[in-house]
Image (cartoon, rainbow, N blue to C red; front, top):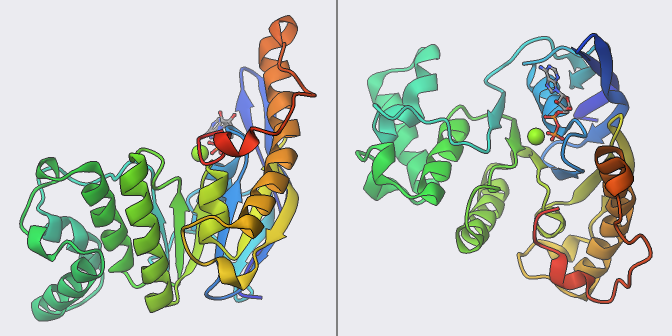
Length: 279
Ligand code: ADP
Ligand code: MG
């Protein structure tokens, strides 16, 4: 197995209480796989991603890439965040090549890599623009280009399209699929959009909460690598939705206490209308 998460545990101290965020997480990912994680807000998805990135250390267990324990960040495992995180005072090209300065490359090599990667995200025409001149979708493309230019083996994406409007999101989803097919990069993609997870990935990991744990793993049929839902993907969406519904109700009950009045046995016939929207 290429990337393994073996018994990862993580707690944080909060108001003198220990909050267990991740409890004994086990996940295996093959090289080149596209894997999504869905789960209720606060179940520890970002924390897990940061542990894989080497930005946060687990209390117990380990993340391993080809058997080697992850202990610190590496350009081989880059993160794309929900916020683009671009430097406003740098041009698109300068933002994209910023991380390359750590590698010893000639000016020509850097220029070529920036050219290639900007072409891949369809931003060649904007190479000299500044972030404030770009739309939200274009900024997120720059963020993806900045990650890809490092030529990582693993791309870690934390709700990268959550702040985008629906149309832009659809465009970026299909671009991401193309990039994945071209580069063969291994992608771990966090989203709270069930449809997005089902349509993009080969495997969907559903996390439960309090503490965060792996509830169920869904393998997608190979024919679904496109961004239009069909009968089969809708049926998987429905299964994932029912797993998550129980988890979300658990959180609501805890947060609302006596005010909790969410109908647990409500009719699910109109459920597909809700899918694709955020949980
Ligand atoms: P998700 O991404 O699934 O919404 P997070 O991983 O961001 O969840 O957070 C999970 C829980 O851990 C939340 O309750 C959050 O407040 C808590 N948490 C995350 N990071 C820290 C930290 N550095 N210190 C204390 N608590 C944290
Ligand atoms: Mg998060």
